[in-house]
Length: 330
Ligand code: GLY
Image (cartoon, rainbow, N blue to C red; front, side, top):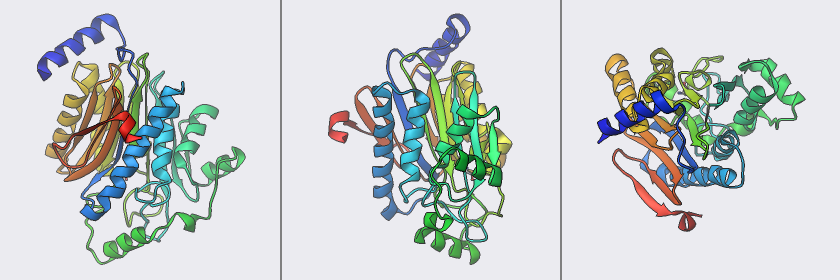
């Protein structure tokens, strides 16, 4: 079946140009791949479901796909159960340093920020980089000045530090978490969306990995972690950042889709290959411009949710796929 779909996609791509999503709007959200302790799962599931519904509402009310993925990721940044915004993990100095990215598939335009402190919603700052500058990425102090000039909400950096992030840093110091991002701690959040004309967008936000050196940039601010192209689809990755960058994971998945693979087949194949080559794990959510959804993770868990066809879909463990009708989900 997958082979047939892939062949169909390939024909469409070659002869009819960019795919259309068949009039459907779809948004997919993930809350990070890892091995989140079971007791933290209900809050995370609630968060990704709400974030997906938030993004979907934006699309239903006439917002763009870029607006929708920003709204979904912003929701997760404000929820301290996720490693993004408030709830971000801590660097070796005990500080929150965050990265975020947003990308429009229209002309493959990204906006990213890296190593920012005290920014309540890094994804909205990345959006300003996309909308208001000729650049792709702003870092550190320059990004901070830009945020101030743009009226982006700045908070005391300490306000973003949670007790859970401090506990993780203590474990890291005792050697009870493995190397940066290879551990079971939760990771980057992300969202991808398609509108009824087949336009796509992707966004991600992260505190990176516990105990990272100050100044470390994550995969989420690169084309390896987040990618969107109206000729194929959009991808948001999570997992061991250094591997994701080396493997060019998001772009790899996009290329597979451009060559005719479904979002599902492309996502799975690329993550399996990354593991075979680098022995590291991760996850990704993808959407094709036709509106087909790909979700795969090689970690034990990844909370995800998407809204499509009036239904909310969600899951955590491999093979788990629950569906409820949209009105019940609200
Ligand atoms: N994937 C998240 C990171 O690079 O930290």
